[in-house]
Image (cartoon, rainbow, N blue to C red; front, top):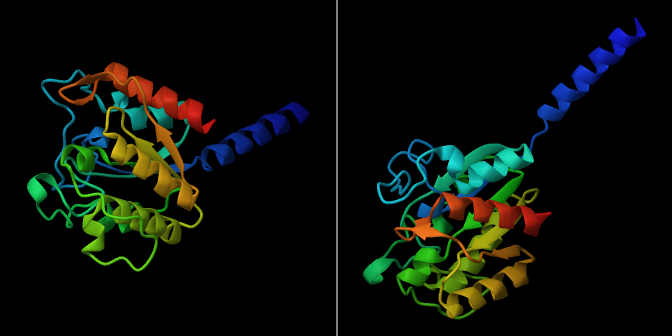
Length: 219
């Protein structure tokens, strides 16, 4: 009888624990996309004929969630998007910018911001460091837009842990600006290194490396 009661109690504890799995949301660009997972109408990269990542389970975020026993809340990743409102060829990218997608992450416990790659590749303007009173024109520059983004995320999701991920092989101006803004807001910046890429995007090996670096940095 006692053994039966113990088994039942252990089962209840297991059910309760499974119901408490942390919810993870991603705000990202093409590095975090996968067809059928991101919102309809968003540009995606994965799967791609010139990259060996073919299954969603091979993505960095899926590997991380699986390793930690978490669950996906929202993946709001849009290929080609910039953190700021200036995209490729100097075009106004405010509609798809990270700063305009803050409210689309559900009810997460953990938020990963994985951006800056397109800002670097598009040579988006840096602007000055600015930590309040942003205008739309201010946020067409990387530094004020990044600050506006982190400020908005912290206010919109006060109970969520926010991590910012920085791609490898970006120009130092973007790297240093990311460090400075994250430091101001107390957000952990995880700077990636040695990421294997195919067609400019993480391969299977690269995805595994991103996951491993996140596990090491956060733990």
